[in-house]
Image 1 (cartoon, helix red, strand yellow):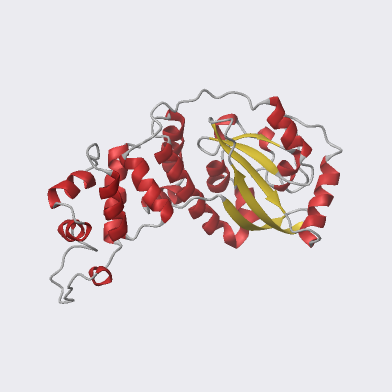
Image 2 (cartoon, helix red, strand yellow):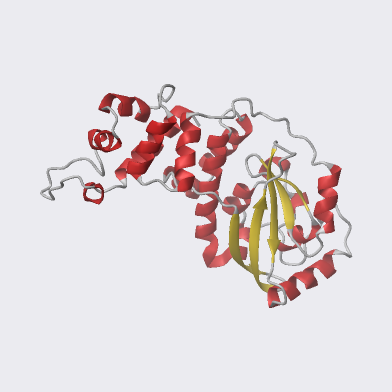
Length: 297
């Protein structure tokens, strides 16, 4: 997770995906062009910068590159808003001292989680590690209390847990790609955080699927999503998710909340799960044992 390497690979990947004719560069399809996508000199000309200046940037040397130049390059590469922010974060990282110690979630925050009896919710750390949760989140997703701390992360659940794959069914590939895209943003946002770096490197070693998705350099924030889950106990659950930031807790990524449409069958099924879980004692905000069929594989 070397920032300069990430910057270099990201720019190359985005340059390679642009066809010359898309940006007005004369192109002859006679087989003589060896470069996939735009050449460096073509991109530099379109962005109004020198080839030498752009080449240094693509080599990961961004110290003297202005925000205006980055925006000009982003315009030529047709970056999305998330990709543009990612480019700026890689070139000029804002968080240089981001190794926050891992501390227990504030009691008040845990009480808030526990009060959401019809809303599955959990708190996420810097690399989407699940730090706290409520009973309904454990009933819907997994027995978080039974998972070792170092593996209680969204990525480990998505890529290493067969129960989560079954829960998402045919929608799992989209989920996996979206999470890797979000994790790449987190890695760029906190380049000095060794826990984020170690997490990404561990997943690259353990999961060929994660490793392949990481190579794509897909970048997109996942602040709100829609899910259709194949729950083993209550059947189909259609949920909307919102990731809410917590300004007073800079060491946290935020709180993820899931809700069903009012009056829907999914809401009725959440109520059924909630009624079942209220009979069980809470352990660190979760359940000591999940409902039948929700255990880890």
